[in-house]
Amino acid sequence: MLSGCRIEAMMPELCTFALKLKKKPSMTQKEAIIKALEEYGGRARLKEFYPRIIELAAFKPGSDKQATIRTTLQRHPECFRPSPEKPRGWWELVSFQEEIASRDKRIAELEAIVAEKDKAITALTQVPTEDQFVRRMVNATKNLFGINRKHADYIRQVLLKLGRDDEQEELLAWIERREQKPAKKVTKKIIQKISNSQVFNGAITESEFNGGGTVNEE
Image (cartoon, rainbow, N blue to C red):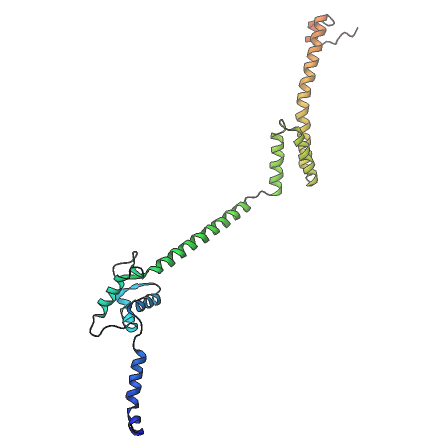
C-alpha cells in the first residue's frame, strides 16, 4: 500500500493526468467538422476551421490531421460540400444551403405580402372623393339616359338622400332640356303638317304661308 506521504507527493501528477483525460477529444472527425462549421455559421474557409476541428476531434497518432479532415469532408457528401458561390477552399454544410433556400423562400413570401399591401394602399389612394364620385355618377347617368330613363330618376333620388341638391337640380334641368328637344321637333312637324294641309285645301295661299300670313279660320 502507498503511504499517505507517497500519495500526497503524487497528487500534482494525478491532477495533470486527470486534466489530460478531461481535455482528450471525444468527437469523431465528422462530428467535429459539423460543429466547427456550425460555429462559423454553416460555411467557412477550410484553413480557417482546421484548428477547431483538430481541437475537437480525435486523430491517430502521427497522422496528417489536415489531410484526414479533407478526406472526411469528401467521404460525406450528404453532410458537406464545396461552397458553389465561394472560391476554392470554402466548404459548407449541406443543411446550410437548405436553410438558405428556406430563408429565401420566406423572404419571397414576405416580399409578396408587402407588394400586395403596397398594391392595396395604392388602390386606397386612388379611391375617388365624394365630389368625384358624384360627378362620375351624374355623367354616367347622362350617358345612359337614352338607354334607361328610369335610371335617371333613381339617381336623382340617391342624390337627394346624399344631400347633393345642386347635382340633383343639375341633373333634373338637364333631363328637362333633353326631353324638350324631341317635343319641339314633334310640335314643329305637326304645325308643318297642318299648314301644308291648309295650303292644299285653299284655306290659305302659299304666299301667305311663306310670308307668315294668318290662317283663315272661316
